[in-house]
Image 1: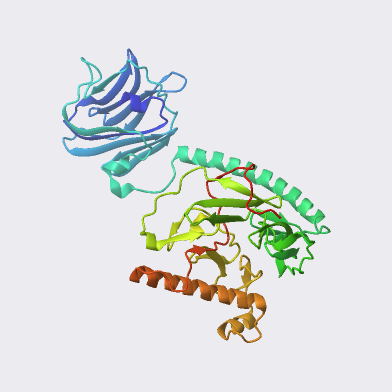
Image 2: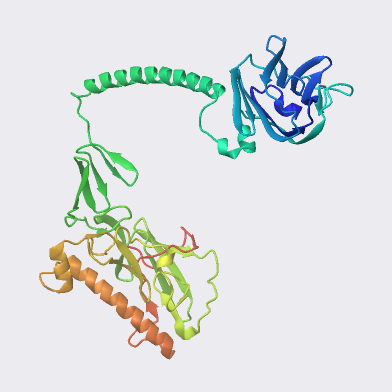
Length: 441
């Protein structure tokens, strides 16, 4: 209890007592040697309640309240202290309220606490005491008399409110000064031009700045992105080259070719050649010459029967029918989906989008006229849209036929054992630059 009181400015002493007639005794006492830091005494002979304590000047002080508790009746007693404000309640009635010198509560560690007497020889209280408490709050009498619960501030609360108001006035003055400076700066901005920018895929573009987004040329105009499809003129390729798509470019570019088996292959294309014994050799077009590619690992074992195995034209390892080519990597980009075919994959525009290239790798949203053409195909349809629709139809036919073949256990009719696989996926083979090509340009 002494530790709870040490250094506190606000506390309440509570007790319920029945004191014998004419008895003078101490209800509670905290003292150190001869110094009484806090002592509550009831004198039946003088009909007084006395509170002894030490002031901040280390001087002893006694506050006397004329009132008689020694009548052999039960009484509820509380003395509430808040800084220099003191209130005495008897039986939940406010009897006295005074402004006094604030108590000095820096109680030493070895101070003694006595109930019902001052010490072992003096101030004996005669009667009955119960519910003696020390509550570290200025309105502790509320726990004894709940009906007295009020929201009025104590003196200590009032002093705190005054301090807070002064702090708020200081903040208001500083804020007003900052607001004045901000208004001056705002007035200086009236003649400034605030440029609106465009944010696209994490990049910020200024007004009238242009950039290429896939197969569209875009411009930032008044904070809005304006795009139009890139028009790709047919490239005029010199002899020994052919127009082909390059990763990262929208339009075809002239690429050097290799002649192999009567076919033109561009840079990076591969071709598998199988002899009558089933032996397979793989070649790759590099720098206008077909180079032998030596596999670095053997072909993986397949989990399907041989009748369901498919030989591809750009790799030596067979795959099972229904293989997921799209998972190996594809070139389908904006608004385009990869669709697996029997021996490869292709790009198909999503619903509501039309192709910007004939391989459907880039697509853009359709306007109302384009949607009408899609609902009634063939009506004034451009070649790129026809190619997209044909690719989607072929993909669906291939999936349907593959499913039927897997169900019946037979290969589809009129299909060869070797298929052209486009686009190609690089395997785990290593190149042998010194291998001789089968055929040279």
